[in-house]
Image (tube, rainbow, N blue to C red; front, side):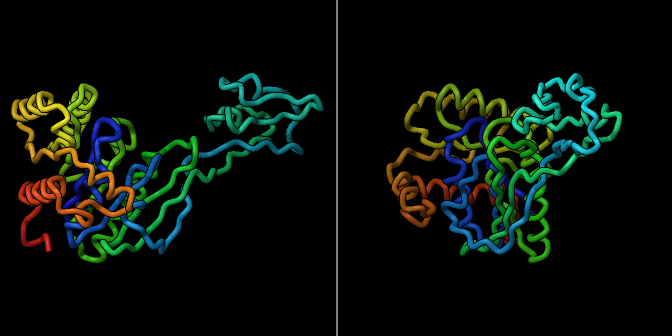
Length: 296
């Protein structure tokens, strides 16, 4: 089993379009959407949810008013000003300001503060016409997205091992933060999707550096390469200097937008120049990462 993660240093480079196309091209695989803060791969894969699980990303304090003596120790100790005293004397906690640091729990002299698990989101195991799909939905403003990514990746690996599937394809989040690190952990190959803009080049360099720090093999492709041919050449030269496999250049094509409007993976919607290049990129990934006899 091989784990392939599609990432980029910034949003909007086309990771999900490419991931959905890989879902259509690969046969023996599990799909994962690890962009739990803004998941959208499900829009193209049309999942039929089979399992729903709650995700607890942390804890929040709760004050037992019967035990509380209104001493104010927790009010003074809270650095986030999330605890205050009401006019009637009761101590209350503002759930929006609270960071769940547990200081109030430790300083309370009468043990009136209890730490309760919070439900931060949900994760799902779904069935699609492309195969199993594991995805998640993190609540608005909730944290610990890296922990949620780790959970759904663990489940995807479990499904792949149980069903003897060859590949786990992971549609990763943008940036270089905790959820990206969680998406990369243990991966066999990171495909970095970039675009020929200054922001795209800068963030590509950052995410490649991070992947190499964790000793993850990387490859690169350019989406919408023809909107700035000079920058595309600059990206190719940089990849050559860094000995990073350069897998292809996807042209800008309005058919891509039309396929998104119809909620259909590009590979199935059109056999245009962009979809043909994505097919070539997938074949090159097979040669880098997988034995051909395992890609059925």
